[in-house]
Image 1 (cartoon, rainbow, N blue to C red):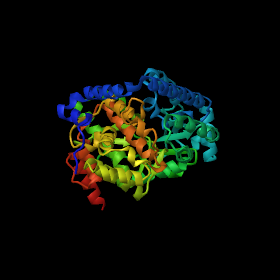
Image 2 (cartoon, rainbow, N blue to C red):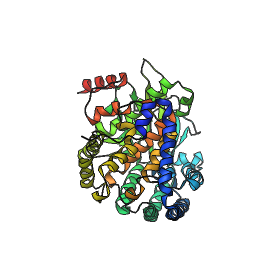
Image 3 (cartoon, rainbow, N blue to C red):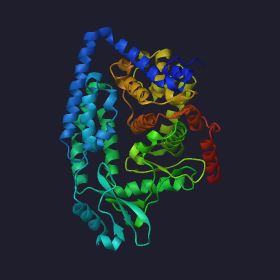
Image 4 (cartoon, rainbow, N blue to C red):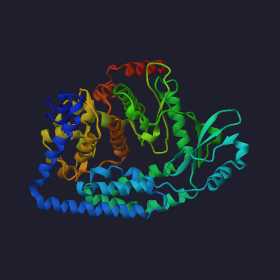
Amino acid sequence: MSELPTGRWRRAAKVGRLAATQAARQAGTRAANVARSDEAAQRALEQRQIEAAEQIVAVLGTMKGAAMKLGQVLSFLDVGLVPESHREEFQAKLAELRDAAPKVAFKDMKRVLEESYGEKLDHVFDTFDPVPIAAASIGQVYRARLHDGRDVAVKVQYPGVARAVRSDLQNMGILLRLMKRMAPGLDPDAIGGEIRERMEEELDYELEAANQRTLARIYRGHPFIVIPDVVTSLSHERVVVSEFVQGRRFEELESASQEERDAVGEVIFRFYFGTMYRHRQFSGDPHPGNCLVLDRDGPLPRMAFLDFGLFKRISDEAAEFELETQRLGIEGRAEELIDHMHRGGWISDPSRYTHESILEQFEDLVGWYTIDADIQLTPELATEVLIQMGDPRSRHFDTMRRETLPADHLFGRRLETLTLAVLSQLRACNNWNAIAREWIYGDAPRTELGRQEAEFYAARR
């Protein structure tokens, strides 16, 4: 078994928690120096990236219903593919599209509710606050009280948004062709089909309610993960009603102690990654707005997770393929890793990879949870991972831009990247590999949260 190359994650772990930022700067400098070896070619490539990115924003800007959701789905473009000189401008444009929630009067939202229930709103709810407590990409969330005294969250779909989104999805081909200019190995038909299927499902709130019920059942009684129960009788195609939960928002954690941020980060990591690999299904939308820190009733942090519209189920074969990829990379079995990824459709031409390059690529992309050491995650490190995924400055750009991502694994990689982004905003520190080994290898837990979770699953069995 060969040893993994000495890369930035090992450097970050060796010099300690506070060295993470410096490690990212060193890695970014190294990548930039490689890119400067052919300045003329680099300038031409960057110009193509800029033109494609500008056209993507222009296409999104013509959309009426899907721009917000597509902006979220394509959020890896924020950093990963746009040259640094234009990145801030591009991020601002994409953020504007993502955050541009429709301004819909309550009387119009009330009409959707009363059409769904076939009766007046005050017959269904005891009280209903007309001021929304949150805006989703295709709907708004309100607080209400049932006649039996229960407080509930009511998610209502914007009127006409389903028709607008389906119309907008016809432009997906244009977007994906533009993305193919950035990443020539992309399979637009396969990726487009997967995105369309997930977004069609997200329009069906009855399906979202079913997803939430499934996870609520899986995690009922869990020591630190809470999924609000669905009120099935009041949930319809355009309305989801669920138990109201109240807690601290993600932004309030910025002033929390490092110890608390580390513990919250572990809960987030266990929920998103653990659900995917233990239960073969997951919420594809890790986002600060979908996490609430609840009041403690013991020594462990407790968190509620919300919004299960963008949801994905994966086969045992797809999950085991990813876990075996992680095992081969962790163990430094380069030749087997190249062959495994080739057979799985992740690598088209194995001859372009050396044993050293495949292990360097593996560590650059997933070293944060595959190296057995404490690593503090920071926004700088998250940015560097995105750069290595496909930015022209990446030392892997020449090989990776010619590869495609099998469609069935697309939303798993989105979960991976966005979970990293959330943990980085927390600046959480942990031995993420020690946690991940519980589902990668079936190892015994090394943390108190892990031991509590193991007891929960043992009792369920």
